[in-house]
Length: 140
Image (tube, rainbow, N blue to C red; front, side, top):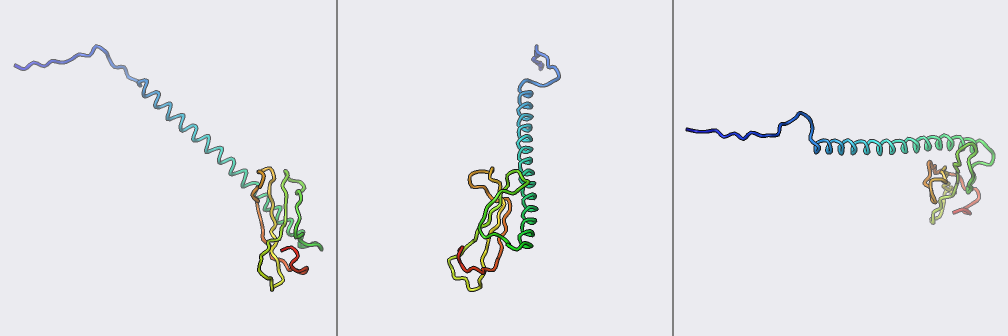
């Protein structure tokens, strides 16, 4: 004769979650929350940078049109604060080469940058312009 011995547990199981499951769930939720917050912060920085670049592009276009319509033209080497902005600056500088220039032209780089971006800020926008070199190779 076969006897079945069953072990009866004295503890009974309630429906619900164990402490380990609750801690694991909270850890996962916290990780997701931190990731979302960091992603949102990165997105906000990218949007601000894109808006700054768009503003700088509009300003550069207006300034270049004004310079080409004026008598003096583009200054070959200058730097100033842009009026009506939050401290944006523009600068022009000749890009010289060591090779002889048989075509009597020069390249001038026009940049708009934000000096609050650091010691050597990266330009928000820059344009390299090919200009006639009436004065000769003084700047190169």
